[in-house]
Image (tube, rainbow, N blue to C red; front, side):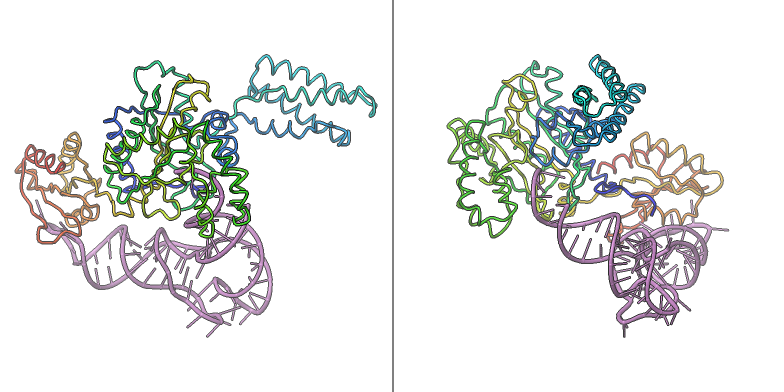
Length: 519
RNA sequence: GUGAGCGUAGCUCAGCUGGUAGAGCAUCGGUCUGUGGAACCGAGGGUCGCGGGUUCAAAUCCCGUCGCUCACCCCA
């Protein structure tokens, strides 16, 4: 096979795509009833946006982002990095070669507009060019001047700004918050409620329910209030959506991970306790003691479970405000007859979460059993340069995983074809074309064969396409101006009802078909 | 990045210790010139993932490589 989709991405074909549409449509409808509006976001953003929001130490930022080299700036970056800061380490000719390469590339980029002609860049390049001239002319290897020139070249090279570095979005919350700030949405009345639907990109090893281009349906609530009732309503909406799409056996887990006052204290305590039991942990968890102690709680290793069970719990370390917030959240959920399972080990991978966190798991997903994760992120708007008073809460549903679970539960799309036009005889095609157009104007799905087929063949094809009806158009129908409507049945239906047939005028046919479609 | 399993027709797979590449389903045509689902007959479709080695002979044995899948890490 010559071409195939690249690693970790895939096609979603009909009829499966119809299920996707139905699920996404359900999200639009349910979210609408809670007052959310859709935000359509760009698929790429400045790298810094993700680095700042998701967290510099996360794997997402460190190794999983797809960076776009829109202007060939990465090549410039490499050329610059090749120039050593301390040229003594290299032979003189090597040093000059690296510098020449960089200088040539920079000038070429400037000439072809790939390097932005800002004042700073122009000044730096001009200076770089003249320094390079000095380097070439200079012939005394150990002169102080020569060393100075080399250092100046390195310094000047650092001054050149290659422009924005852009990445495909690994998640959308950062983009939503960026848009919220950029458009001054904090001046809108009440809370700003937004949802988004679309692809995200992470360069991970693919696995069941995990792709490099994957899809999320998410919602964010931004505004001045952090009242737990808002958290509860967000969760209520999420569950309403899962109920609408008939997700079976979904389980809701909640936790509170504290705020910027009490979480660090807990993390420190946890770290200290972990150090005491270090030798009882596996290599991965030992590493996480330093990198991300909270993640140790996530470990699935059976032999670590007894150790983890004895670790201090964040619920005992929350500050008064967080404790009260969490308690009120539980009351608010109870008010809505929602019964979450508290999971003290539920932590989020992204830096920006605080206080409320929640997750929903569903069956049929292998080891990737979370279909949705979310939580509160009160500091994020401020972190990204927005008004400090703005709070936020949101979630993201992993659509790929949701689909897997729905399909596991037996969800399938019926064929959408309402009518197959079985025409035959030399004079009937124009009538069939006219009828097909009429039916389609009434939003019916119609298949019209381009070439004449024997009636038996037509019906056979209609059946295999899964059409609900066939309309037969032959000489006789033309003469009497009545179409023959034949009901077809899905293959699994009992044969006893098969083939019911009647003659109808065009008007009656239309009425009958439009009614049967909604039924 | 690490580990394991698997690569033969569009799909699911058979093909033993080397001896001319197969089945079922699907597709197309016919039996069937105004009546579907069935049956029967026929057709098309494969450098057996790729490269090298052993051999008179390799889908089969050996080495390498690429791809897919699942799991770990991480995460939705």
